[in-house]
Length: 280
Image 1 (cartoon, rainbow, N blue to C red):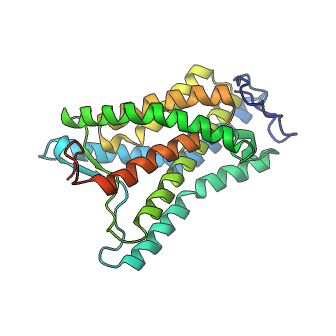
Image 2 (image 1 turned 180 degrees about the horizontal axis):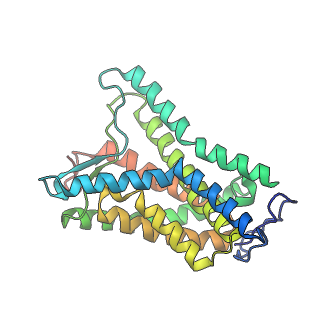
């Protein structure tokens, strides 16, 4: 993907449909490369890179449990204050807001570079086009992802994923939707747009950048099991290709948010009422 001269004038973002390149224009020195990679490691260490390490530790713990993986449960949106719904709501909103802070940090770093989050295509300039593309990607990825999860869970390679562990209160669905959008914004801005930009500026080839982004995406889903790892690596590769084609993260934010919204809200409404959906 194309990269601007760091600290100089902003680049002109390619129009929709224009492919991105990975030819770096900066840095031209080893010191500049180390600085950008150091910055990237700090951002990841404060966000999804740390989550990947935590997921690996969690998966190791699951493997050493006496129960098989299929009989263990990974709860994604659990209660923060059981039996105290108003306090629980405050905690939920707090964690959603805190989860977006790495995106704020990325935005700040891009401003220091002389550009903004718009250079990643994170803006509302193409709302209808982004929505249409995102819905199409969500439809293609969501169904195949569900099949992979059901198959891997039935085979004992994946934990039983409970996308919602929230109580049946009035704010459950709005909080689940907000959580879905928080996940989508965080992951696509950091692991898709920002990561690929910094790796391209550091001279990495496009295939190496795609593999890195995809493996990282899979790593912080490893706590779910092998299915979570493989499924999200494939999703990551598809998202990288779509981002290179469109030059915008917003369609992928929309796709991710739609996938998670259906998973979170659908589970909350269907768990215990349909036989094909694994539940604790």
